[in-house]
Amino acid sequence: MFALNVMLFGTGSNVVVTAGIARGVFRRYGLTLDLAYTQGSEMLCETLLTGGCDIGVLAADDVVYEVERRGLDFCIFMGIHAGLLSLMARPDIETLAQLRGRRFGVDDTASGFVLLARQILRDHGLGESDYTLVKARGMNLRAEALEHGEIDAALLSPPFTLALHDRGFRDLARVHDFFPRYQAGGFVTSRAWARTHDEELTTFVRAYLESLAWTLDRANRESAARYLAEEFKLDPDIARRTYDMLADSDGGGLFREAAIDPEGLQVVIDMRVRAGLLPSPPPPPAKYYDTQYLDRARRT
Image (tube, rainbow, N blue to C red):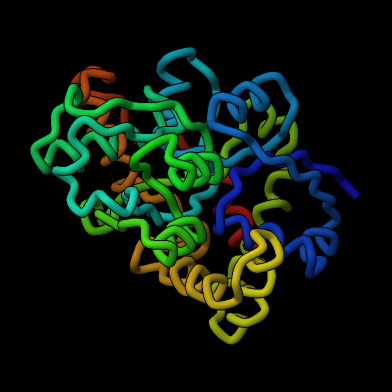
């Protein structure tokens, strides 16, 4: 057995990994996964950089940011989803315009999904000085901060969006409606680690693809929802609705076959160019991903 250290955010898309572990998929491929959960993208990047984990999950924007800012050799080797994100706000905020003067919670003020939020708010007449960014770290922590009144709005994904909505919080905008092609989350590693662990990484991808196919098969809806309910201590109805959103690959859910979308990654890059964070013309999307492990896993 080969042990892999994997760091994740606490989000619903983890069900592919957690259900795969519970069902023995990874073990059948000769892998044991030691899972850890990050409090935010900075923590995950540092853990990956220092060898504390072999594989992590980041927003594509985080990868672009770290590669360009520090010259890190991070690369996306599998896609996860196209942006299962909603802009959630406190119950008293009924429109995006009412976010003027409010606190917007983000993972990192310079990367991640902050540019998505800024673009959506800009399209609704709010400049960067019209609201305050608050560093509230990872998805689950942002959801808690929103619920406790520490922030007024945040971009969140299911199950947090669904649970908050059922408690009266507002779903003001869905990212997929604004950006139907978007590379949101992806599995990431360093190119150096990947070169020396080619077989193990390809095997991980192969096992993940098997678990992904099981997850996307709606015949397994009830079983997958049970794993979600157990992981997040969810009401069964919210777990089922979370599954339905994850399984809607055409609506921003899990990418079929863990695809990496170059056009979606180009959207990420173009946002950074418009924000003055990348030169024009920018590097091509291929600078930030490597499909060789995914391609090899699909062939075997």
